Length: 89
Image 1 (cartoon, helix red, strand yellow):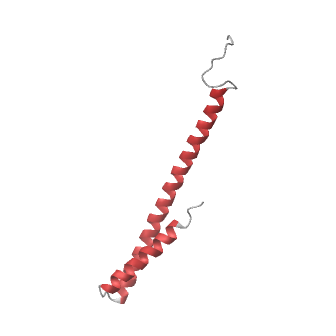
Image 2 (cartoon, helix red, strand yellow):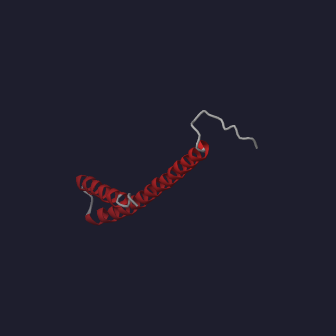
Image 3 (cartoon, one colour):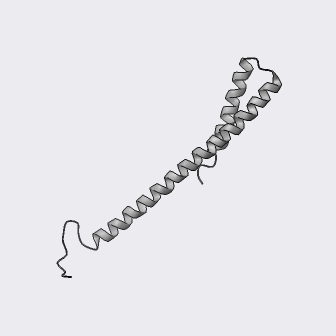
């Protein structure tokens, strides 16, 4: 969908932040790589979950809009709003 880039950008951004912080704190290279791998995998999963949640909300909103539009079409029934049909049943 339109949000497919959220997870990769979140992953790369947080990876860059992690590298900057670990360099500033003088981590060993091997420790830095292990932690970076964990950060990248973790934030990729978080990004995928976030994207999925946003897509679910979009689907729910689309259903509501369709139901409202369908309800308005049935309610109007060709008559101006506020008028009552004089047909007998």
